[in-house]
Length: 153
Length: 113
Image (cartoon, rainbow over the protein chains, first blue to last red):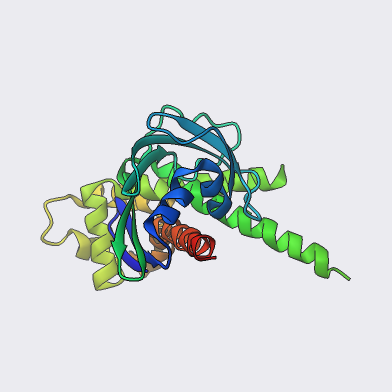
């Protein structure tokens, strides 16, 4: 995995040992996307559509996300907007800036190269960024509490 | 509820970091203290177009955001950079970046199965 960082964008690249059609399905089908991303989504993915749901990862059950699909070019590109780590219960994020997530697929020897770019972080309000870090810590706290419950004597 | 209110304290503690750094003079002061180490206001003001009074005001803003702290040495106050808050602000992108690494690792397992 490669990593290019600025303050505004995150770029990732990974080669998956799977055909492009398989990778596309994992991205473009809301249920499949949810299975690996860790979110139970309601609504199908289509250009201009919205899907939302609750994160299913341990320690993040309190987090809901909403994905607004922008572009879908079969087996090539998928992009959506969301509120990164919009996790504060009871806060309306709808008027706040979103980040853009762009997936790009490319056939390479032995599989598919997937590039992910998330951009627009510079426009995210400072307090939201601080909050995301704090909620991440809260997630860990919750995790540790779960573990503590199992190992408690 | 206790975690929620603890969280709110965390926000009110961290958010001013971004605001405090959103000013050229203050950013310059932080950069100077970070590269040159602890300095007095006299040293900070030397050769600067900004007055001592203005520098003091900016340092107080930075101090309330937890970015700098001061100790009294004799008749002077010596100001020092506190990197912890800056690191917290910067770690946001690292945090998001790490979430993507984890998500893509799960995607890899998912499509290669």
